[in-house]
Image 1 (cartoon, rainbow, N blue to C red):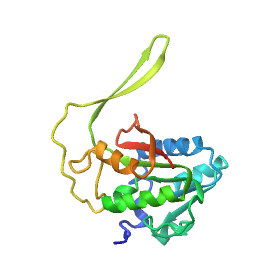
Image 2 (cartoon, one colour):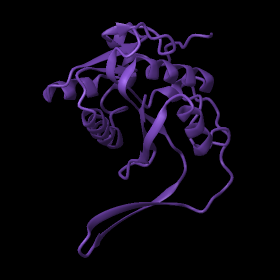
Image 3 (cartoon, rainbow, N blue to C red):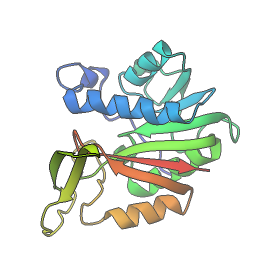
Image 4 (cartoon, rainbow, N blue to C red):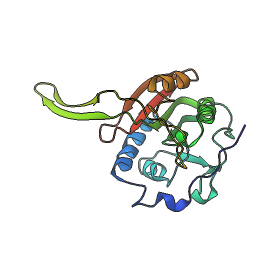
Length: 208
């Protein structure tokens, strides 16, 4: 199988150009989903600048990282499509905004490897390009609620590789139902949702 290759330099992850407000908020969701599993150990695939690991340490959560770029100083150097670990080595295995950086068939291989290594859960986020309207309201006796309503359907865009993303959810070749079916065929999906603050981020939780 073709191996993934490094796409960007370490400088890509600078504060101003990479860690925008939406991405900072997404880290809160990442930490929330991982900690909900009450893990003893966690493996993050493709850690980028390592923000999740640093924040997790503040709460006593041990996260190890894997990447193919030594400049990012991962705990383990290797490929997501062939994880160098025994089955069920980690309570939680996660990858956030990473699998779209692989061709789709390779992303499914990487996901299968994540499910092999996970004991409790696999948590991922992926870009979802379907446009939505965001609404929030205070409902008497119920409280504050947030809603995402799909905008009127139009023809999905054909994805063009931009040097980083090989595919994105709800582009023409990868509608949401196809992505769910392909991933759920490899591991039972228990939840998927989009961030209200930035719906481009769609989270998935799977249980081996």
